[in-house]
Image 1 (cartoon, helix red, strand yellow):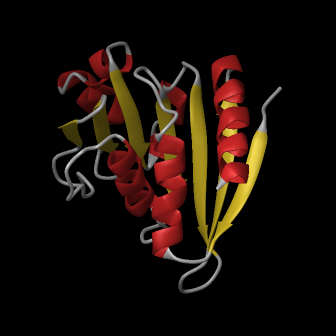
Image 2 (cartoon, helix red, strand yellow; image 1 turned 90 degrees about the vertical axis):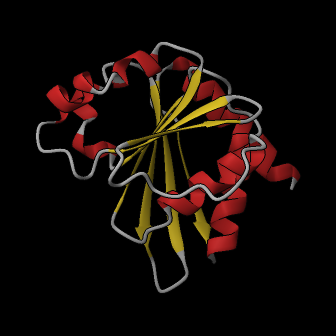
Length: 160
C-alpha cells in the first residue's frame, strides 16, 4: 500500500517551511526522491530541510557537481542527476550508492531519471507548477518506514 499526501504551497517561503517541517523528522538513511520541472521548488524545499538540520546556508542545487555533502545535525547528501547521460555508470563511478547505505539523509533532485535504480524504499516528492508562486507538492511513500514517516509528517503539519 502506498500512502499519499498532497500540499499546496502558495510561495517559495512556504515551500521552504514545508521542507523544514519534514527535515525536523528525517533521520540518517532516509532517501527522498524529488521530481519536478525547472523552477518547481525542489531546491527551495531542500533549503528548508537543510535549515532544520542546522546546516549553514547557502544550500544550492549541485547541478554541475552532481553531489554535494553538508554537515549539520545529520549528514545530508544533495544529489542532482539532471545532467547525467548514463546514470547507472556515472553514479557508480562517483560513489553514489555508498551514500545510500551510510549515515546520510539522501535527497535526489530529478529522481525520475533514476527511479529504476532506486530498488530501495524511499519517499517520492513531486513538485508541480500551479501558477507563478503556487506549487502542488505530492508525497508518496514507497515502503513501510516511509509510510510511517509520512504519517508523522502529516501530524507535524497539523501542529503548525
